[in-house]
Structure formats: C-alpha cells, structure tokens
Length: 92
Image (cartoon, rainbow, N blue to C red; front, side, top):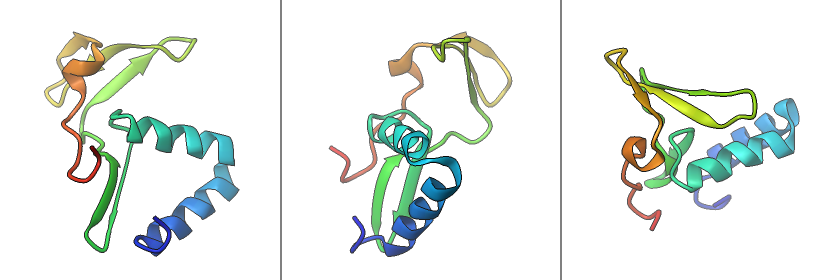
C-alpha cells in the first residue's frame, strides 16, 4: 500500500504518532472488515469502508454498538449487516 498510496501512508504514520499506533490500527482494521469507520483513496486505489456522512452508531460503555441513527435522525437497533455498505471494489 505504501507504494500505491504514499500520501495516505504518510497521513496514517502521522495519525499513529499523534493518537497511538494501537488505536489507529484498530480503526483501520475495523474499516477493512467492513465497518464504516475508515476509508482512503489515492492514485485510483481505495481501501476500507466509506464512512456514512450524517449517520452515527452509538456504543455502550463496553464499546458494543447498540443503536444506529440514520441520515434522517431515525433510530434503529444496530444490526451490523443492515448498516454495512457493500465493500469497495478491490476489497474482496
């Protein structure tokens, strides 16, 4: 990825320095698994799962998602497969 997406790699390196390697790696891994928390594009390459603008997933104290709020503000029980967008081309 570093050769294909050098700008993204540099940004991720800076984020790791700022927020910690473990935290940033956790977010990236979640995006690679299909959770809408991380995506990046550069030079025609895309990785991760796009973040839905205007929607939110609410988590409990243990970090477990339990509520999904859509773009219109409607609340839904969180069901991972129901809120997950299709994977980006090249992510299969």
